[in-house]
Length: 603
Image (cartoon, rainbow, N blue to C red; front, side, top):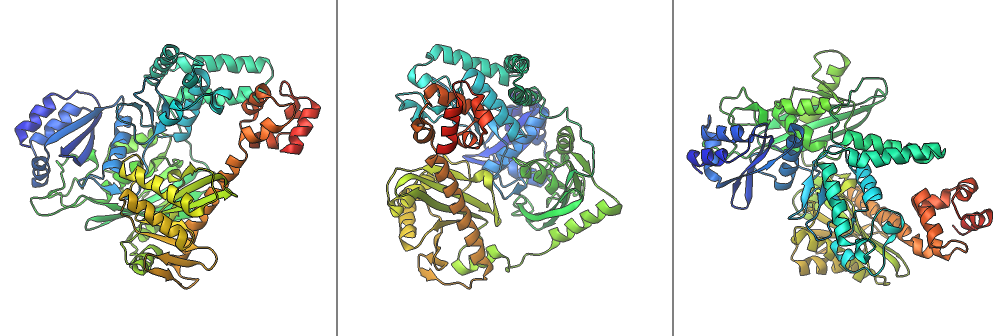
């Protein structure tokens, strides 16, 4: 792309905040954000370095997306960097991103929280607080009944599902509401996401006041919390104010850069005590020659490179911190305070954090400065080839497996069959990336494992999984389970290293046969952690399926469909009913002392 082409593209862009992408074919070269898209992109027509000239020349198109606020542009930039891993951005090597809410492009749209919207969907966000997003979406479903089921489940229903009985869906699938009425409700929800808070807040406020008048204070308190989340939703948290206290949480971050690799060390403090530490690797922009690849025009607002480096050949620690802050805290809870070794190059990042109520400091002296020095020492510490991931790579003859996914199947004699898919990144569990699947009822462990792994492989091949591909797959089991998993990935055309770990003798099963590693080998301990977590997650899901409403509450005398619905609305789940007291149970309409005693006995 020539500079004249850049000017032509820029002239067509709006003067609003948003995100732009330099693209070559199907490859995203660079993602940036802007307060004014037209002005920002136009600046690339007059490069101030050989590096940006090289990047612009490689690009053949410029894509863009408009956002409502500068904060949304900042978070969308982080999401796109995570998704596309552009070679000219500083990139954190994990796969978290900020959640969006999508309304799909179906005749009867569904609402879902996602990190990778379907093609044609209308997506709102991204948002920093997933918990707040979940609260708001649940309130929307309680009032407007928008479905959240997959298209497959929607098309194949002959009676309303449990969501309808719990008051969370108006059941357009079976005609409980006509399509025109449902679409009207969807349009109302669109207006809420466009900024009309009262559409959702007003009915909840009325119900809260009514519950308080009935002296149903538990319900009123729940609605009050929902109302708080809704009223804070469109503010993006920018109205929040934080004060420092003894019970605050604090993260200490320090960055170092070595060649094309950067590292950030994080120390986490709670109640004045250091409780956790971790190190994270980031990839800096690739550099091939002095004519260069890494694009920078000297504007530090992009959080790109060191503005004092006239040649712009490396990313500075300050720029690394800018990239790390937005990418790392995707779907993670923000601390009350963050101490940094350097001030980030991107002032928008600091404004965003402070708007979310986080105190951001670069301490110069005292105890806090000593914590930053400690974080710097951790960032500079060389890992070498002795850590458990590198040892595992050496044992198996593969690249260092930074992302490991574990699989297990759980059932009771072929009933309530479920599968788990857990994910570890840099040796630590990433619970937000866990997935689970209900499998057909059958007492065949090999077939069950084959179906579970094939499901994961197909989603990866089709681009339907919002996670990046793992570096290693681990199945819970011996040669039979491993062979079944190999058949699954081979049939799908998914090329990923895979091993098994048998529980009985803790033998690692590979394509070349069993491996009996020392019981204290750190690489074996790592596989055991992944295997045990996959097993725990599968058993937990199996137990919840086994407690399915249709096989528990329906079998209890005195509990019909209407009473069951009231119980679920009051207590939220079968587990909630199980733990309820006699007084709580008899407080539900239709539940007398005898039925309450029966419930407690049966459950």
